[in-house]
Image 1 (spheres, rainbow over the protein chains, first blue to last red):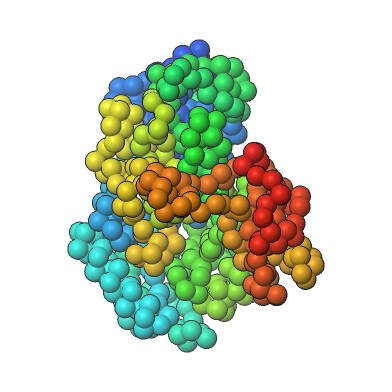
Image 2 (image 1 turned 135 degrees about the vertical axis):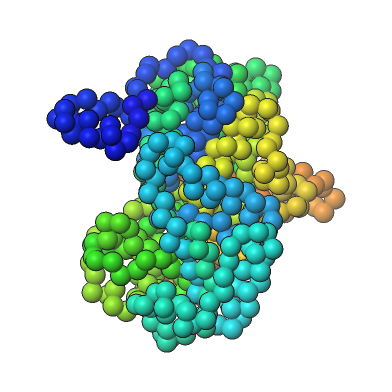
Length: 414
Length: 95
């Protein structure tokens, strides 16, 4: 792997930038792999990287039907946080945030982590009570959370309208949270995995599985039939499709989640502002664009577009909180296919089919989980047993009723 | 913005409706085991392609009805079957 540093950059400058190497190879698929990962998004790429880096399993292929990071990993609003409610959730997501904190160094790639805080505002006394409960739960789990008065909110977010139709009565902030650059995270894991010998195969769609008894033995793809000892489905919105081809069902709903950006402007917002009830969240990228997200289009869809009505609802909420943003032009809008589970918590671990693993159900909150998702799934595949951090997120929990109902508990969709 | 055909009110904008999940789910007898009960409560088809689903015209007549829509194109294949009619056929084969 061609290492990046100030010194190597200088060398490239002095040699006219003629010696940059591609970030990864484009190999032809081999007939057999130890592990095949279906899905070349952040989670799939991170899993491949950790399989190679932590477990020495390098005969691995990542199969991606489109281009690497072209799915939800490249379409999110980049929020990186660990302010969850249940201890099992907070432990997992904070592990992910901790991995994010040293990711750039470990992968030798600037992931542009900016720990500018995620600030949640409350617009009623009831919501403030909920937030106090939420912040206390987080603090009890050993993760940073600080309650704020309206004045402190105004100091952190000078442009916010404190006395909108629904006044802001307070909030809380997780200071270690923030944003990072989603494409960089995808590419960093891809480059790291490739350097360790993982084959990244793009334009390769899995159409079915080859099975022997109740075991998977390989995949049939648009680029040939490949065999593997172990296979993992890491395909977010398309998880149910792949599960059906392997002979089992999932409790997921694939729906549209939109994101949008305004034209770039000078710095006007230096934290991530989230309003659960006036439903919108917004941050400002280093390019100056306001990055906006809100609620999902709540019906099954694989279109990656979203209804203009939902876009309008997101902007309405934004302008209620930031009237001055009404002067900005909306530059671009897009969407992903998010797989939402009944308890808004992920499903990760083994499946009813032997040698087949899955990581799905990340819903609207998969981006922040990429490092820990990859780390725990890699462990699970290597040991054929769930990593301790993800034991509560097994598919079997729906039968026992031991749901990790984060959405209800924290009062946020996650 | 999708336009949805309500069997009572005709073609209306999507924002007048609430989505009601997959249609034709049969609530099992309470004597079934946990596994079968879980299947009914949580497990769904969720496939790309034709999907039988329920809609409610919340900001209109308020009635529930069933429809078949392609989740890849949002095209409604058949709409307006009222929810209290028994299904003409099992749509388990869809997709």
